[in-house]
Length: 288
Image (cartoon, rainbow, N blue to C red):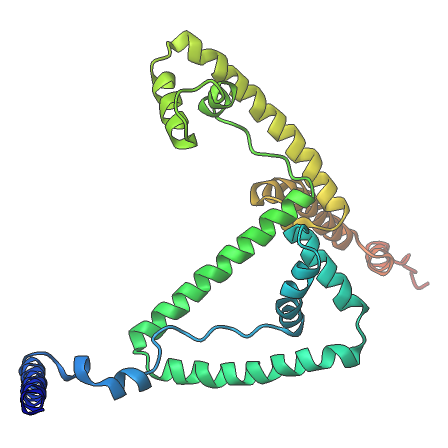
């Protein structure tokens, strides 16, 4: 029994020495490194540096809830058909059935505003300015995408292709390389090695494509004027159309001024009568 107690005491003493050595090393580390590395309370309670995520609306909350249920009921359904099914369910729901999801979205939106204010309060002026610039860039990018999609839907003609683009479209399939980037690099090298008379063929095709684009754009812009979308017409086209109108307006204005000037130069009837009365003197009578 005594040897067992002796060994247990030795092991306990060794453990206590190991704990003391660990705390000593930790104290030495904290004296060298900043206190932020050894403050668990600060790490747990510190604010997240990333901005809060925007909350989902009522419909997206319903989609998030129903997605695993519909997928479980239809294991072989495609992702597109799954979303279509959930959208159809949402459309067939009554306002009372949609209300819980919409109320949850409103509560999340209010919490998002509080979290966003708290997040922006800890940012520096330079960080706020950078965020505003990034927001403007994202907005401009979305606007450009929407405009491009609108122009495509309205049937705007495609821009003319360059000689190299025509050459690349003709030889892309047979080009060397596996990836698209490798194929384009190979085609660019082949284009540079072509003779001038070989490039002349593609140059002529590019000129013909310019003519095609010019004719199609003219008819397309005329159609845009007919449907009241002058905002989509190019500025150079507007300036060309404005010149004849300005010339006609200037000509009519000049004609009006000339007519007015000639009208004022003609003597009136009263002035002509008075002039004739002055010129004709009465006959003289002699006294007898």
